[in-house]
Image (cartoon, rainbow, N blue to C red; front, side, top):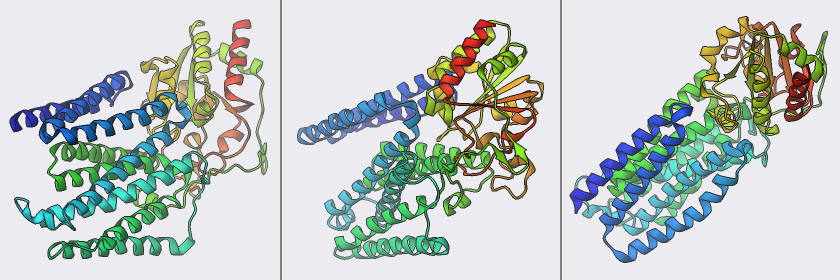
Length: 472
């Protein structure tokens, strides 16, 4: 029977890895998700076979049913604009689960004294459980704060106590480690006091809150992937403590992939992971709209004028941003692209790695509107195309098109790789107002000589441009 369980686990792991490899491209992402989900089903069956206790089966199956009932409705009904916060929430649930598993193991083993009966060294198992408790609790509460920021329950701008922020975080971290050491020492004798284990969960949870609160909205893509990596590592640690191979392998896959993604996101913003965790960047400004900045003045345009520019173009690039997601304008953009392509005009989509609120956000939105995967171009592939482009349409994107990242050493985003929109012959920016983006800084692109602003709801504006194109 054990051989069958291990064989099923190996099949499940292979499906996890195959599913993850499918997520590397939009075309295979759906298939990858289905394969990984099937792999989780295989792992679940293997776990039931391994337990062999009918009473435990009933509890596990009941928990599975509850999870399905809770998880499927939001996953199916959530708007595309809310996917980042849904991901943050689901990730938090994973971290919280790991913390509860560690707590359950502590209780079940009578303060870890029960682990003394386990084969092999006891100390690594205790350390793994304590690590899972700290990181799981931190990830849960940090993800909840990230969710609340993205959902605008909390302000998107950094919330901190100034110079005391980092010392406060250091004290909380050291406090949770000290509590863990006390629990570990106690487990070697007669079992640890549950109060100290509770202190671990509380201090780590507060640390999760105080770590994410000072992080501004502009860094949210990095935060989401970082918390995802931490949840995976904590799950692997819990699997080590429970001698559960499925948790170890799945946790390491999530931890490794999340770490790689975090590093890629940080590079895309020219930010170190340490500087992101330190917080203080990204304001989510909702200040009063302005049409001028000093001697600079933004030029507004109309749907009719925008349509004329587009009609005489040879190549058009669409740059999607969070404003497109908010306006649900992806289908309208697709219709406009069809109208342009019917005239023989080539249309491409420039995707910045951190456009939107999470990695891949824009790809998912455009795929929902049946935009060809081949038309979606990553930043490195499309940046050389802007100088040969007649018209670039920026739909709700702000920070990822800000030329100050290349030209202004005093800008907080200086050095961040951005889309070379300003190199286009003509730029049309679709925005509701002149307010700054999630980073809370002004965009000089709006005042450039080759830029015009088409104000209004992006979905309605694009639809009007399409109608004008058809009338020409």
